[in-house]
Every structure is written in structure tokens, then in C-alpha cells.
Image (cartoon, rainbow, N blue to C red; front, side):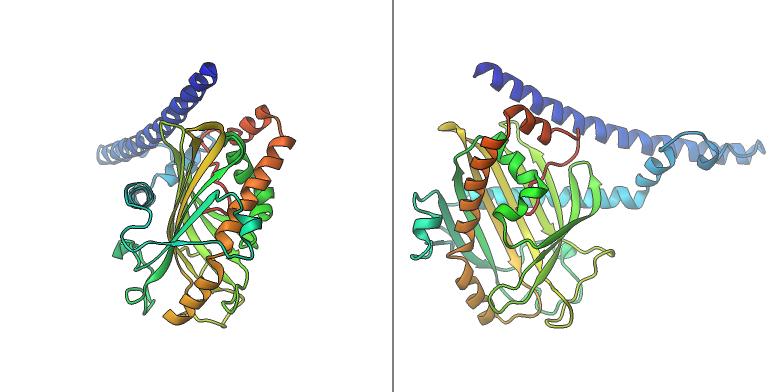
Length: 347
């Protein structure tokens, strides 16, 4: 309805205003800290003694916020902001600007034996291309000998879900529903919050065919476009709290790399009760797997797993819609103002 559209646009404007206010607050904290340091220095030079230290001031949370705005953290946040923009631009170009089968992309059909179950009505289209690591050199992992010499599988998918966008976002962002639609996530954890809308996560996947268990450390970020589209981007990164095993067979899981990826979730322009999801995922399985082994593994799963994923998302979201009222779904997505509602496991 018209009123619903107006309310939706209003909520988007409020989210954007909230992010701008958060950024402004961070800048003000940095300025305040710099002024305090200059005043301390001036008072010391005039022999007036120092001002009370942060620890001597009765200001709950002030020290923590000041520490979070140290030059190192601000620089790190800027790096991740840059990554978010670069990945979004990269993914938007591939998903929406290029022809779906152009520039080396090959359409993948669902396995004949599974088609009736997972893609009977053709709701999902899948495309595959092998490409080298597209990240900036400065963002790539150190000490990996094959990081510039191999092509890795990149998959793009387009699917329609028979449920409203609010339901789909609520279903995907609920950690308790991950196992309903994604069998390739057996464990996950949030390692560090970078901003209220971005974080670094750890994910573990099971053995697939002859490829042993893999784990991934990934930066994830989300935002909303003005038209209501939810954009979730991710890129492989390193983190001291989750060092990885780089050699196959030397640990419980070998470190893989979700090089770059993006998810775009939007209302179906032809049916407001349906949702469109576009996904791009480029990954390096790690462990030094030779090209032939990667080819064999990818060919063994690409005709089944993407179609199964969207079939289960559709089935799960439709059931979720029946079990939840529209008000509770909206409250779930917006229960933590300024916090990320990134669909766990999908990125």
C-alpha cells in the first residue's frame, strides 16, 4: 500500500541518518581527544600541572570510546570502509552490468536427478567462471605461494523467493535458522565488531567430497540502498584471534578464503510478495589444492548445492512467514538500532 511504501522510505532515511550521526560522533570524539592532548601539553608548559586523567574522571564508557578512536583503529576502519565500497562496486558490475553469460561466464544447469526437487520451476539461475584473485595486493594474505598463479571458482546466482522481503531478511538473519537452509556451515562465530554495521566472522564448513573441512575468516558489511535493497558484502581477511592452518591435513580444518562476495536482497518489482536474491561468491579452497582437484570438486557440487540452497531458503522463508506475524518480523530486523542484520551464513 502507499502508506507502507511511505513508512518503508522513512525507515531507510532514518537508518542513513543514524549511520551519519555515528560517523559524526566518531569524528567529534577524535577532535575532543586531540584538543585535550593539546590543552594538557599547554598546561604542562605553563607549569599548571596536568588535567585529570581519563581514569580519574567519572564518565562511564568514555575511556572505551576514546580508545576505540585511536589512530590505528581509525586507519583500520577506513581500510575496511574502502574494502566494502570496492567489493560492492565489483559485485554490482558483474551481477547487474555484464551480460549473464558474457565475459567467460558459463551457465550451470541443475543436476538432472535433482532438478525436479530443487529447481522444478526454474526459480534459480547459476553461472560459473574461473578467475584470479581480484583483491588489491595489499589485502591479500602473506606467505601463500600460489596466491597469484591460480584461477579460483566464482559463482553468481539469481533466485526468486516466494515470500516478502521482510520475511526473507528476518529468516536469514536469525542464527537459529542457519541449519535449515545452509548445510555447508557447521560452526560460526563473530570475532570482532568493526562498526555497528560491519564485523569479522569465523565460519567452518564440513568435508565436501575429497576436500577436507575448511574454515574461513571473513570481513562482512551490510547497508541499505535507497530503493530498499539490502547489500551484504564480504572479503577474506586475517585476524590474530583466529590463526589458520595453511597446509592440508595438519589440523582439524584447513584455512580457505572467501576472497570476495556479495548478496543483494530486494523486493521483486513485479510482485511485492516475492523477493529477489542475487549472490556472487569467489573462493579459494586453500591447502594448496592443484587446479585439477579444484576443478573436480567444483564440478561435483556446482550442479547441486546452489540450487539446493535457494530451494531451502524458499521453503524455509515460506514456513517462517506462516509462523511469524509481520510485526514480530519487523521488530526482529530492527531490534538493535544501528546493529547489523547481516544474514548469518549466507555470506
